[in-house]
Image 1 (spheres, rainbow, N blue to C red):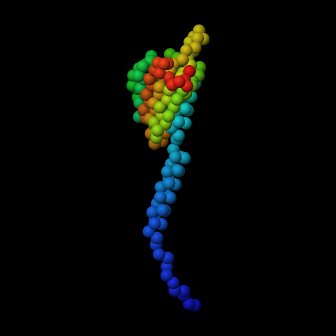
Image 2: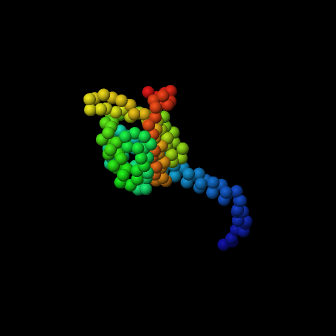
Image 3: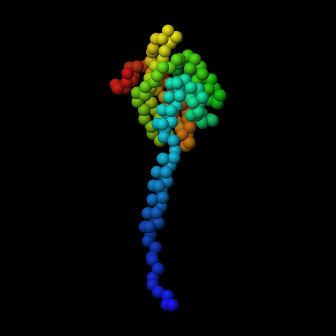
Length: 161
């Protein structure tokens, strides 16, 4: 049986570069589909706060997280177990009947938002607590740092309440 003699295919220098580029794009797409969406994490966290659910509120935090309240009834910086105590105190001070996201933006793993929490007192009177919230997430979509600030209603965007 005769063997065919012929030339083997010549390597193409651009083929390796094209393969590497395709792999990099595939990995980037995969990473974005697997990692938590920062806006989804933030919205789930705000929903847990609005329902005054301490367990769900705390579930979003990384073990080394820091919570900072710049004003309000419990200003300060909290970490570890103090975060739970801060939220329990907040829920004791405010009865939340709803919330609205006035504006939100995400850049990589940071979410910044303006929110309006509707509060109700013992007599059933409603008021609005306008706040800004900044969340910084780790690579796993868990909150590393959270900062809350009260704002004046005149600082709300024109589309706000």
